Image (tube, rainbow, N blue to C red; front, top):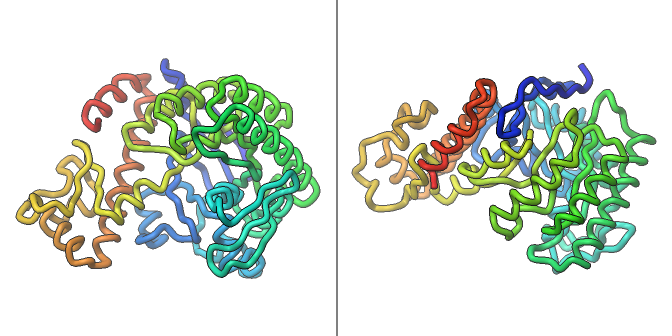
Length: 371
């Protein structure tokens, strides 16, 4: 099938309805990607994810490199076969995880020396190594190695990281041209630049000159306000080609997703639905429910009367609270299932609203209910 991205419709807000074709299936955009860190979405089987309608998963290069190892996965026929997932997979470069290990790594222009969080062993991750690992994994969409910085950061620090990210993007592009296969994998560049509009524009323009088939916007939702995240996203997205997919990394809250879509974002990922589920925070059409609270102990109602997921159609709030309070594994499973359904259903409604040119009214209603 190869790769093809088409913009099928646009909304007055600037949102795009699209279709990204990959060798492992078609992704209707805007799309939300659940995070399957170690080749698994915690608490859900692959069959569960298929039934939920998950179009594409995100897997973590750093974790899979350390355990079980990319060569083992290559020997098993690649990540799709290893984890028995027939649909598209996106892998990050490992950069964010490495840079989050502030006490265990040293960054230089050549790459990053870091110590494993598992056993303390020393490793070196360069742009070329990140590509080597992802080629072995066989993901449909790969990411260049980038330097993600903390927020707030001053302008000189942001400029240094953006320049290094651009240099690494060039090296990644070269490595893919030498060793990759454009019929099997797609390589995205990543726009950095901190919270400085001029840097974001400059970095985006330079990446566009490298002619990547897709672009990500990175280094956001790391501590800055939602307003600043939106501003930087708008600045970066406005410089990216209209005929290429745009991926905003690591976002966001349910009420924020539609804001990013209105800025022209086609893809996003976030650990929030799965991580929140493990802590008993459940998303509903009327806002968040902390299921551990005593007020739900005798509540016979479904979690969300407007939700059609398997959990809401079968179980009561009282039962969900009982499972969480007693530490049952089923609590993690059911909570995660519902939260993922909730996110994916928002995306389905967003796509429908774009199709009919009514996204602004949908956004107003959604945010009035959730905020």
